Image 1 (tube, helix red, strand yellow):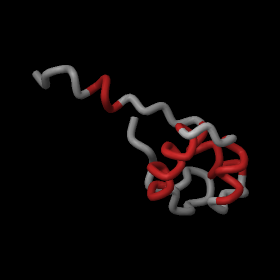
Image 2 (cartoon, one colour):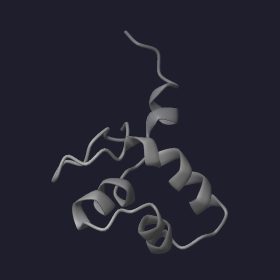
Image 3 (spheres, one colour):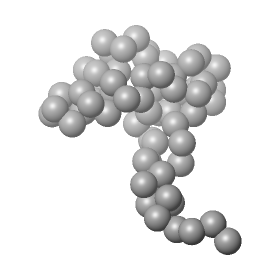
Image 4 (tube, helix red, strand yellow):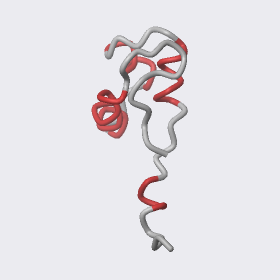
Length: 65
């Protein structure tokens, strides 16, 4: 639900890259090119961003019981 602060596999910090990745992806850039330029070369780090589903807007609609 929330982007992980660190990669699950290797522990590299990836949380700070999410906003920039999302903005560049919205402009139509290719995901692989963006990740290469951000310095994410390991498959585990790339999977942390590629596999993330931003569910926070849907979850915040519901009232906490």
